[in-house]
Length: 386
Image 1 (tube, rainbow, N blue to C red):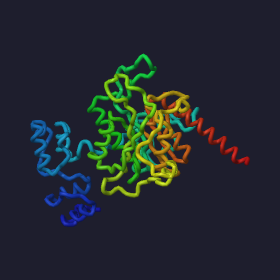
Image 2: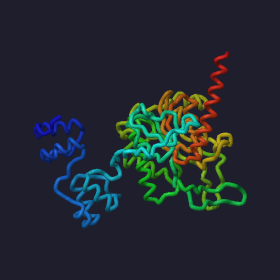
Image 3: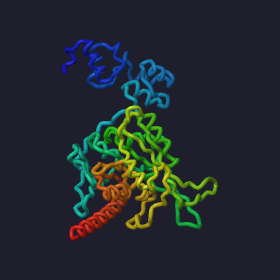
Image 4: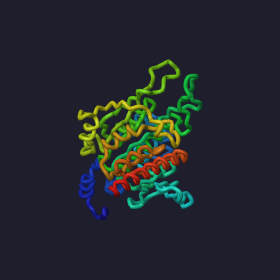
């Protein structure tokens, strides 16, 4: 489409057709820029030097004058970025970086379905039913848009301490994992970054189940609702009847975790999400399934190849997969740990892609998946002979 040959009226009609707003006072060159980039040009001129001299209050007033919103919680550097680009710094989409050949390693030949590092540019290249080792944000940026039906994940909670607490009557020590330690601002930005990529990769109205404790669930919920305006369907409460006792004796014993169930669409537009109501009812003695699930901690048999400090029981993941996906759906878990999501997905004929940066957990996950594959193969062989 040649915008230069179009009249102002035609340019504005095209902007209206695309659902873009705030163009009535723009000049032709600005209308063309708006159509070409999707970003509303700012009236007047402003540069980095001028912005740096302005106070936070003045920067906010300038943003308000330009019709920009959502700046009340931004720091000065973010306010300046917002003014210069017109793009909210917490909502901007980052372009996938080019991956250098030296960063790509061959998949391990010794284990089926395990890729130490694997990147996909098209749907056909996606590592279906494989574990991808590496930084989940970097890897997700290499995947194409809108390819996953569902995401089920258990991200870092930011609850670890450099030295965990223990007590005389138990071998239990509170979380002290390096991968779970962030400065508060860093954790917020990290959460925004990985959720941005998950929402890009999910299909419209795809289900998004994310675990959290009181340490992080409010941050995750705020980001989903306030920054991305995503529809929250429900909060599931997982009650652990055999939770570890409270070591400090200064508070209630923490015996719950939460799962936010969100849909990848704006609150008012979300529709037709997957919920297998009858399957959940059948699992619950033909009664409606409630959102509080009493399920014990992970069984020792699910940890026989090694332990993860926050490994979820298969029973919890089983309900999420049966409730929120259908056979042959593609499930993403960007913090896959020891692979419980993949194990349960395999059992129910769902496809999956797991991402985990800790090699130790990947090896445990691979052993669990291979054991399941052998079991399924034996079952099928027995059926063939009957």
